[in-house]
Length: 193
Image (cartoon, rainbow, N blue to C red):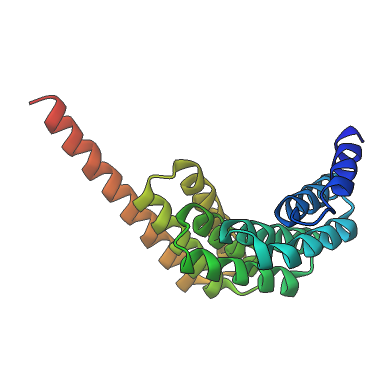
């Protein structure tokens, strides 16, 4: 309650002219509080208000983040078409502005929502793209989350007896294993001549 009360007071202050960037951030923060409380309707309302301002005055990374927030709330509500729409918009911006960390996170989130929607081939493509980016950039936390997404997709494929998807996932994981083994062997040769 203290967080929401403080953000509400900040909201009044940020209504002043020239405070649009701060107003958008405050609206986004209020949306996050409502999301944490499980009040998804209010969360989306505040995120959408924030987005409308951010699209006019904020840097692209803030727009991407709010689009991802909206997509995430819609996913939590089970509104997959809306979740996909906002996550696709966020992903397009991450590619345009080359924000690799957000691109990985958004692709992984999009992959999970696509999987939940039964769009398994698209899910695999997004999760594989996220894995590739995470490996190349060295973002281990995002790589772990992406591998979890691929594992979930593999489990879904087993449940559905979808052998082509299963084979593709096993191939991707085998390539990862081979590359990690190669790196370990090279390091071992270098460190222990």
